[in-house]
Length: 362
Ligand code: HEM
Image (cartoon, rainbow, N blue to C red; front, side, top):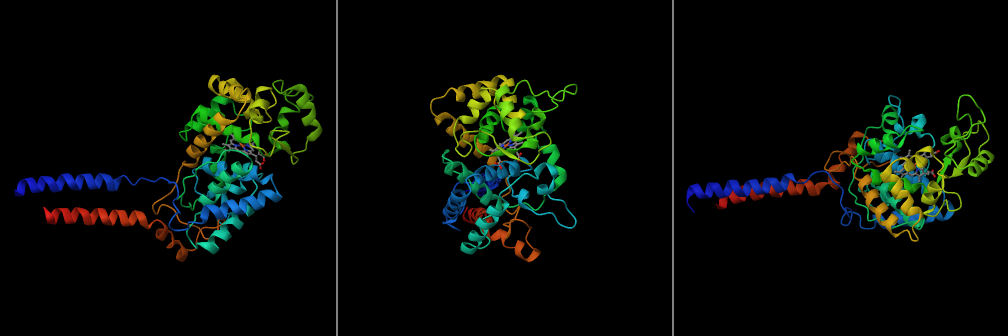
């Protein structure tokens, strides 16, 4: 080959390889532990099955824990970190005091550490536990991408700006979701998670008492009057602590009950009721409320849930694989993380070697 065309060929091949090498952007993938810890997903499922057999109510708690983690700066396990002497963590924000299920994550993580030390991140444990919560509650099976790494930042100061305000209207909610590339449809679909689990009286009692400043007996007129009466029986004025089903009657079954509640003005949270006030979210609620089977909701939920699970994912050395979910690794253990993401390093090295080899051959 003439020197000039050889040089052109080298440049063209190198450019192609560099483009391919550069395409290893941060993303999670299906079966990321297939080689490094093939039993990981089975271990999580087995543990979740045992936990939920004893305490079915924890399904909602794990599902919510994951959604809060993702919406607070990304699905990188920051909600699991404990506060330290110098830092108040997300979990200790007053807005997150009601979250439950941390001990379940810790016990699953301990099982995974025993089987495959330093391999499976806490962010993935939470993602898998949440998707298994849906499955075990008779919802859809959601193929869940894995390979997230754990972040080391968790600040209570980040919570308020990224959490829907109590009483947020539907425009606020759509705007909040849009910040994470989630659509109004994702909002309507993911809110369907409220088909399982419970809320503290504090989360909705402003709808039951003192709804107007002039009448202490006034309740939210958009809430069904009979349901208001039932809720007042469950949550006396001033009771902030009692837990009430978000979807009474089928609070541990992942079904269409939530949409039927909302359509009948019996959505427990004001943010649930707000879905009726936007054309798109209302249409979705009404369609599911009138559906005879959950197939469309299940397919949509699986898709939106995976969309949510991709928010702010850390891969390729940007995070670490925590040994314990409640604390960042001590400096010496942090060096374990690159081992789990070595595929990226191998890819870059092979790209480099290929380019050099091409240059020599041509
Ligand atoms: C529009 C955004 C959302 C708002 C405003 C919202 C608000 C809330 C509130 C206030 C509670 C009650 C918390 C308590 O009193 O302890 C709750 C519970 C819950 N949320 Fe949401 N949520 C939203 C989105 C989501 C998403 C995206 C998911 C999951 C995909 C989710 C799953 C749950 C579950 C399962 C519970 C029950 C928790 C338990 O039983 O411990 N939520 N949510």
